[in-house]
Every structure is written in C-alpha cells, then in structure tokens.
Image 1: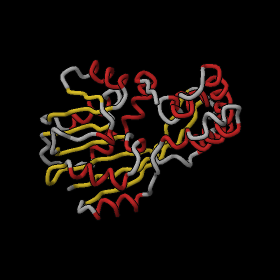
Image 2: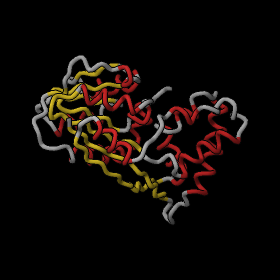
Image 3: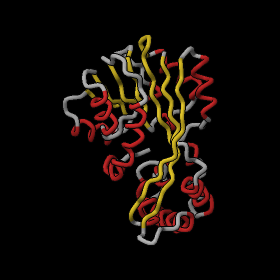
Image 4: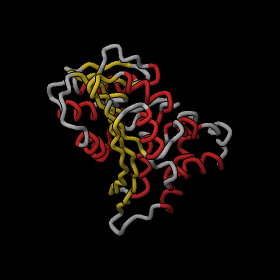
Length: 257
C-alpha cells in the first residue's frame, strides 16, 4: 500500500490533537529512550521529542515517502524504514513506545501487544492511539462503493487491509493478562472541515481510502472518488457556511510494564 506524506499532512493540526492528548496521559517518569512506531512524516515524533526533550527518539515507518519527509523535517533524529510487525527493537529496552494511528494496520494484536511490552524496560510505557471509526458512515461508504461499482472484483479484499479491531475491554484484558497496568479511554473528535464533502474525501485519501484506491488505475480512482464523494455529501450534510463537522472516534491506551 502506498502512502503520501504530503496528502497525510494536509490535516496535520487535526491529526496532532489526539497525539497531544495521548502524550499528556503518559505518566511523568524518566524517559531516556523512546521509539515512535509508524512515525509518518514526523509530526508525532516531533511531539514526542517535545514531551520528553531529554530522550533519544527513533522513528519507524514502513513507507519510504514518510521516512524521507520525517528525515527532512527532523534531520537530527534517527528514522528507520521498517515494518512494525517485523520490528525487533534491537536498540531496546525502551522507556516509551508510541504508536499513534499505526497499529490498526498491523495484524494479530493478540501476539503484537505482548511482543511490544517485552521491548519495554521495567516501568516503561506503551502508548497507543487507534482510529475507532470503521462503522462510521465515511468508512461504511468506502466498502459499499467498492462492492457496488465496476471495480468490485479488484476491491473485494480492500477492507481487509486494516487489522481486526477490538473494543476497549479486549485491549484492557489482554494487556492486564500480560502483567501491565492499563489506562484506556475513547474520545470522539469533531473536526470542522471547510469544503464540504470534498474535504472529507481529502482527509481519508491520506489514510483509510488508500487500500481502495491503490488497486485502481487513474480513471478508476477518479470514478470511485466521484461516487464516494456523492455518497459522503448525503451522509455528512454541510452547514450553511459549507463546513462539514466530521465525527472521528479514537481509542487510546497507555500500558505500563
């Protein structure tokens, strides 16, 4: 799956809000070594460095475009091209592992979470935020448009790009069974997007729409997006000034080893 740092960064202020909220809930403990899993273009890495200015911070991402953007933005920090599922954490143990809006793309959380906890030093924290919006109209319509169009065969498995999602209770129980103390919560953000349905489409072109667009050629992408935008306009009516208020639920947890 291809990623565009420029597309993702179009809504950086909105995407930074949950990162700040997550980092604010990380307990004030000494952090000398931290890693940002799924660092994207470096916005989360920058906020991680601000929160713990004395830490040695490394960013990890599987997208070469994202890593290039992060290195340009933060030339003094270390960034590595790597897949989270295969990441060994050779520089650990870590005092903090941050995973902001990245683990939803990684399969088998029942195996992944214990492996990440094992890479923490005693007292270290695993801080995670994941979108919890697969049943929101914006995502439901991605699947419906994919199933109903001439591209149905090509997009039959597009919805499988994201890992199976679990609820707060599952994450709490799984992490507790690993011996961690857990703080878990869910927040719904309401993002005012100027530009109506087109702005909603631009938002998701940087993230959730990628598995649905990548298999299509240029003409297919244009046709899919036109049909999707029309459906979004019906699901998210614009306010009188043209703004769409986009609800965006997110699940958070901080697990301490």
